Length: 144
Image 1 (cartoon, rainbow, N blue to C red):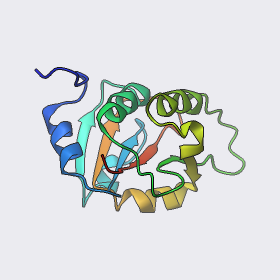
Image 2: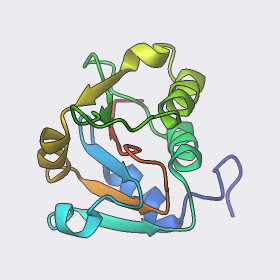
Image 3: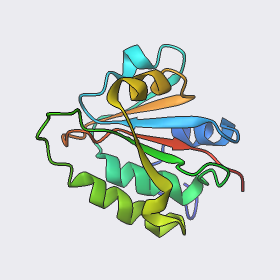
Image 4: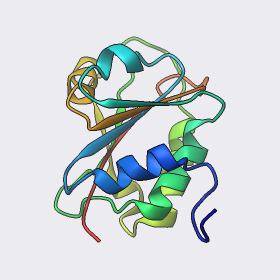
């Protein structure tokens, strides 16, 4: 046990977060995200019993967001014509604002298929049990 480290962060995940360098990316995927196929060249961490906001909050406790890019946090855009609501994005704004002074200005969106392409380049992908739709998120690491 360590002091000040959220208990949800496993030793495996902490090791990966430490290994990541400036501008490396990590994806937190919802329960529908194809983590294993997207993560063929990445570390894939299973966190099926957890949801994205709690994982995001824990990670941002120890993970600096990149200050050299305008949007170090990116969400998967809702497909045109899809009527899905995304209230989970409001939760993301609160969590990001808690850890980064840019708040919601640090958050962008990426078209769905471009999101998949960017995910294939990620250092790591976390597979969660999140049931909200369009709950996928990419974080880009900054410096301490």
